Amino acid sequence: MSRERTRIRRHTAKLALAALLVGMLLLGLSACRGFFGQGPIALMVIDNGGDTELPVVVWFHISGSNDPDGVIASFTLDFGDGSTVATGVNVSVPISHTYTTAGTYTALLTVTDTDGRIGMANGTVVIGPVMITFAAKRSLHYDIYRMQGDGTNQGAVLITVDDELFPDLVRGTRDRITYAAEAGFGSSWNIWTMTVAGGSRVQLTTQTASNQIQPSWSHDAATIAYASNAAQTPSATTWEIYTMTAAGTGATKLTSQTPSWAIAPSCSPVSEDILFVSGSKNAGGAAADGGSAIWLWDASAHTAVLLKDGPGRDGDASPALTGLGTGLNLPAGAGISRPVWSPDGTKIAYAAEATAGGQIDIFVMDADGSHAKTLEEYVADLGHTNPDITTSANEFCPYWLEDGSGIVYAKVDGSGNFQLEKVTFSTGVITDLTAAGDNILPAAKR
Image 1 (cartoon, rainbow, N blue to C red):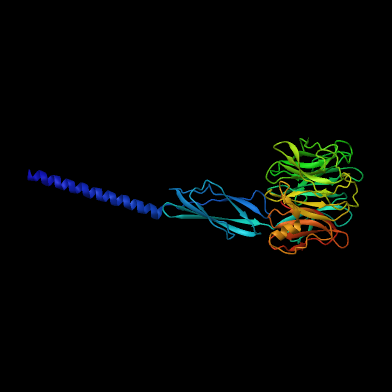
Image 2 (tube, rainbow, N blue to C red; image 1 turned 135 degrees about the horizontal axis):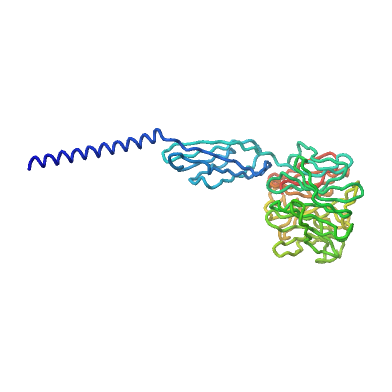
C-alpha cells in the first residue's frame, strides 16, 4: 500500500513537471514570436483626383496595409502640413484631407500590430497655388490666359486668329477648360473644351449662323450649360439656356423665356440648379424697363424662378466689348457678366447697373436673392474699413475664388482698358492682377 502511494506521488510529480515544461515552452514560443515575428507592412495610395490647385482634397487609401503573422492594431497618418494627425484602427476606410497652402508635403503612414511592431510608408503630395483663368486681348483678339492668384506667371493658354471668350474650369479636377470660340470671321460662336495647357481641343457644338456662348460646367462635370440663340439663326431676341453632356451630345433647351430671353448661365457648385439672366419686370415676358434680372433654374421643380430684379440691369451689366470679329448678337443692352456662386453655394456675386449708361458695381446677396449689398459693404461687414471697391469706375465680371480667399473682378482703368483686381476677404486688401491690354471673365475652380 505504501509502495502504491509512493508510485502515485512520483507519477503526479512527473505530470506537474511536464506541465511546467510545456508551459515554459509555450511561453518561450510566444516570446520568440514577439522577438522573431514579422512586423506589419504599411501601404498607402495617394489620390488627388487629378487636382493640384488650392484648395485640394486628397484621399489616402491605406487598406493594403497588413500584418503577415497577426493583425494591425492601430495607425497614424501625418499629412505633412502641420495639421492634426489622423489616427484609427480600421485601415479599410479611406481618409481625406484638404490642403489649403501651396507646397510639397511628405505624408507619413505608421501602422502598429498587436505585438507593438510598426511599419511605415511615405508619399509626396504636391499642391500648387490658386490659378485664375481669364480672357485677355493683348494684341488683336481675345484669347485664353492663365495666371497665379496673385497675378504672377501670366501666360497664354490658347491664341488663335479668332476670338475666344467665357472660359470656365471643370469642377473637381480643374484639368479642362470649356470656352466659347469664334468660328471664323463673319460666322458664329461655338463651345469648345481643352486642357488647362491648351491641348486636346474638342469642338462640342456646330451651329451656323447662330451663337453658343457662356458655357458653365455642372458641379459633377457631367454636363455643360450654355446660352444659345439657335431657335432662330441668328436672333437677338430668342436666347435661351441649354444643357448638353460634357461630350457635346444631348443638347436640351431648359428655359422658355420668350418673348424675353435668357443668357449668362452659372451652374451651382452643390446642385443641379443654374443661375441665369433674363428680362426684368415681367416673369417670362419682355423686359418692361429694358433692364435685366437674375433668375434661377430650379432643377428639382424644372422651372425658372425670379431671384433679383432691381432697377436697370442685374447680373449681366458690363461695358460693351469692341473689336470682335463676329458680333455676339446679345439682346439689346445686355452685357457679358454673369452671376456667380460662392464655393459653398450660399452666396451670389453679380454686376448691376441701376440706370442705362450708369455706374456698374459688384454686389453680393444670399442664394435666395435676399440681403443684397455692394461688394464694398460685404467686405466691410467682414471687419475691414474703406476697401474702396465701389468706385466711380465700372466693376463687372465677378468671380468667387474657390479657396474662399476673395473675389476677382474686372474694372475699367484710367485708360479705358479692362483690368482684373482681387479683394482678399481676410484683409480687405485690393490687389491689381493685370496691367496690359483688356482682361475680363476671370474663372478659378468651379
